[in-house]
Length: 165
Ligand code: SF4
Ligand code: SF4
Image (tube, rainbow, N blue to C red; front, side):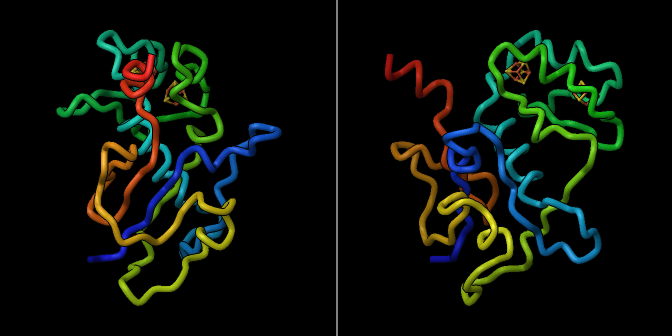
């Protein structure tokens, strides 16, 4: 089975002070790039966002930077976003975190890892367990979902909270 990255969204946040950590990134062309941030943003929009029908985040954005794609997921045009955080303030469910939706754009190219790769700079510099190499597939009963063919995300979807009520 091919190696994948497993991103555990809950582990990015310090349990004591609640602050996010995104570690360091090996993206050579942009020294301040935090590639993991780009993955976390996408994961939040795919798995945490409730995909509101009237999407107040889209309505409030002064730069028209947010839109729903054909699959119903919110996407942010990072070339338009000015980091005003209006969407962060209006989202009634806390989906959008101001630490994640910043003006700066980060890029993750997944460092071309393969089955022989032992570690990555992001894995080494993040809180333990935030990103791991795994040999597994998506598994809904364990709340593990596929972000793409190389990345899995562990996250409790809001539907899961409803099911547990
Ligand atoms: S932070 Fe960006 S996406 Fe959010 S409302 Fe402001 S401009 Fe729009
Ligand atoms: S307001 Fe929040 S939960 Fe609703 S669509 Fe926007 S980001 Fe998702």
